[in-house]
View 1 (cartoon, rainbow, N blue to C red):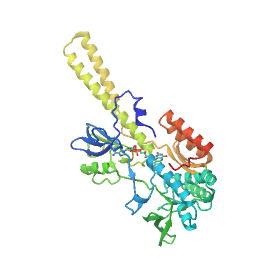
View 2: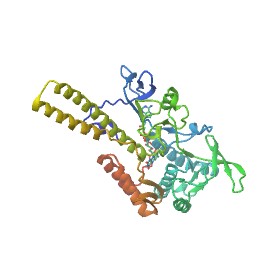
View 3: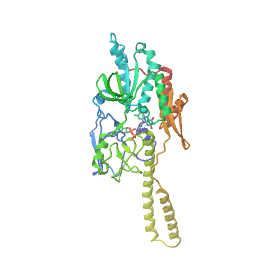
View 4: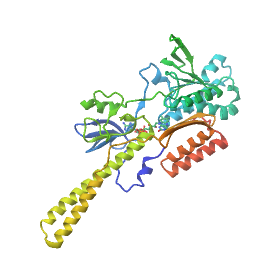
Length: 412
Ligand SMILES: Cc1cc2nc3c(=O)[nH]c(=O)nc-3n(C[C@H](O)[C@H](O)[C@H](O)COP(=O)(O)OP(=O)(O)OC[C@H]3O[C@@H](n4cnc5c(N)ncnc54)[C@H](O)[C@@H]3O)c2cc1C
C-alpha cells in the first residue's frame, strides 16, 4: 500500500485529506457526506464537504451476481484486509486438517482450495497458492502433502479471455504440470459453509449439477457498483441506462453533469477496469485541471491588462498590447488539451512456478510470450510501476525475505 499522506507530503499544492467514508454524494446540493468509520471518534464522526467540482474514484466492489452464500462464505481479493483474511483461513484449514483424528474426507475438504474466476486475479492467486504449498507448506506441514489441492473454476470455456489463444493454452498446460485443476464451463449456483454447488456444461451441451466440498473459497469474478456510486447515478437522469458504472464522456466528465468527473473502476469509458487505465485517467485529469487553472489565471491577467491599456498611451500602451498578445498565445496553447486517449501497454499475468504470460504492445503490433524470462519481465514491470522508490525497495525486500526464509505461515 502507498499511504496517501506519503504522496501528499511531496506536493506543493495545498491538499486536505480526510480518512473517511463518503456515504452519500448530493448532486443538487453539491455536498459529499463523509463518515469516520474508524474505531476512535472525535467530536464529530459525520460531516459534510461542499464542492464546486468533484472527482469520483472510489473503485468498485466485488461482483457476486446475487449467488446465495457467496458474500457470507467467500474470501475476496480486493483490499489488504482481504489478503490477510485469506492467509488466516489457509493456515486455519491447514492446521485443522492436521488436527488429531480428523476423518480422511474432512481432511480432503479442508485442504481443497477453490478459486472462482479465471481472469488474471484468479489465475495469479491460484498460481501463487500452489507455489506457497510447493515451496513452504510442504516443508512446514508434511502431513498435508497428499490432500492439498487447488481448483480454479471458470464459467467461460477458457481462462484469461483477454490473452491470445497460444498463451491461454500455455497457462492451461502449466497449471496441469503444477497439479492445479481448471474447471471451465462451470458456473457456481450456490455456496454453503462447506460446499459449492456448480453447474457444469458438458461437451454435448447438457448440464450437470455438482457439489464441490471446499476449505477455502476465493471469489475473484470481477467488479460491481459501490453503493455510493449507485446512489449518485440514481440522481442523474442521463445515467439511467448505465449499469456497470458512471458513464463518462471523452473528457471523463460524468454524462448529465458539468462539474463531476469519474476515473478508474467506477467510470465506464469502454476500457478494462485495470490500474493501467485508472492511472492514465488520473494523469489526464491532473493535466486537464492544471490547464483549467492556468486558463483562469490568464483570463484574470488579460482583463487587468485590458483595463490598464485604456489608462495609458504611447510606448506604455504598446507594451501592454504586447503582453496581451503573449498571454493570448499562451491561452491558446493551454486550451489545446485534447480528449482522453488510453495507451494500452499490454497484459501480464503470473501463472505459478516462476512463469508468467505477457501480451505486450510492441511497435505497431503485439508481442506474446510465456515462461521464466517473461516472469522476470513481469517482476521488473511490477517494480517499475510502484509509485515510489520507498515502495520499490519494500517490495524487493519482501521478495528477498520470502526467498531466504519462506513465506510467513503464522496465522495472525
Ligand atoms: C488482486 C488484483 C490484482 C490486480 N492486478 C492488476 C494488474 O496487475 N494490473 C492492472 O492494471 N490492474 C490490476 N488490477 C485492477 C486494479 O487494481 C484496479 O483496476 C485499480 O486499482 C482501479 O483503481 P481505482 O483508483 O479506480 O480504484 P481502487 O484502486 O479500488 O481505489 C479506490 C479507493 O477508494 C476507496 N473508497 C471506496 N469507497 C469509498 C467511499 N465510499 N469513500 C471513501 N473512499 C472509498 C477505497 O478504499 C480505495 O482505496 C488488479 C485488481 C485486483 C483486485
